[in-house]
Image (cartoon, rainbow, N blue to C red):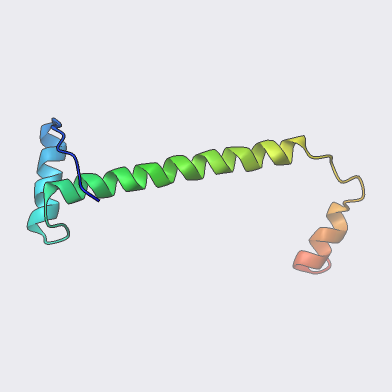
Length: 80
């Protein structure tokens, strides 16, 4: 996949960070550092979206009236 050239400005902190990552050999270029950061950001956003969907599903589901917390505790941790 061919990349597009885009110019970005980094403050001193992130400029130093990307330089150190390249100097350490972790990445081959500043572009690789930025692409990795964007991939992680995208993954985190997708995870958050899916998590919120799951939470909404759980909140919308009916409460199990047959659930017995004492029985569950005894089964999980042994009789008290």
